[in-house]
Amino acid sequence: MVEFLLRWLPMEKQLSVLQLKLGLIAAIRGVRLLIVGECACLYNLDPVEVMAGFKKYPADKGVYCPHCARDVQPALSSETVPYPFIGPTLVLDRLMELKSLPFEELEKDHRAIFYSALVHFGTLYDAFKQRGIIRQYDPRPANWQDRIAGYLGRLPDETIAQLVGEDPRAIAKLRRQRQKPTFSILDVQASI
Image (tube, rainbow, N blue to C red; front, side):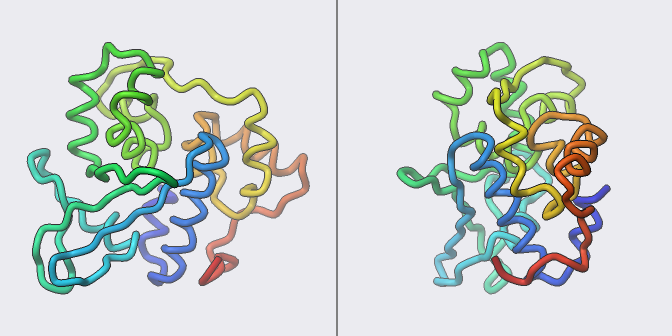
């Protein structure tokens, strides 16, 4: 629900929330990801345009360029390697093909799908749940509470819960214990 509401924010604030979400993924998983998309017309899609541009059909791998309407294959760029950034529908279809693999193998051998699933769904558990498969999949670091501390109150509790694989009530309780304010759309900074 919160993610749906965030879509109605001005683009600068959507970008800030998305950057915070990617920062939280980095804090939890130890990999910093950037969403990039460059069209043949030389237009650089910003991450919000990429996220909004994914098509609903599994065979469609890219997004539309808002400048010229061509297909663009966006990437999730880590510090060392760019991986194709795959839309949520295709991620779910590919995960169904790979559902018997252990978490570590998915993370190591299928990084484009793994990282795309994290950005779209937060955890592999939530991605599989979209297809009706319940699997305990995502190991968390032992110190996950400390890793998310800087994001409490800066992102919705529901978003943090989704990314860490925890109940939103537990995140709200942790936020209150650490005396962090409740997230407010009005407090989202236009730039980070």
